[in-house]
Length: 67
Image (cartoon, rainbow, N blue to C red; front, side, top):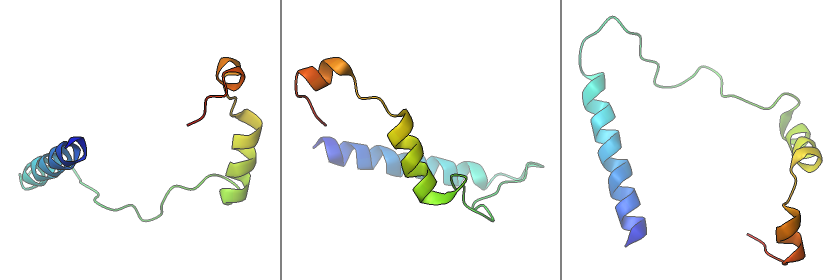
């Protein structure tokens, strides 16, 4: 049920965005970037960054909590 509600809300937001893009204006709307964003150095560098900087809460580690 919750998943269906989220999908419905996303769908309604998409419809709303579509209607606002049909209005004529002087604003340039870019639907798709020429180049996607990428972490400097690629995915390997991103993994190393996460290993170095991502800190799991000590209280969660002690309580053996995951997820």
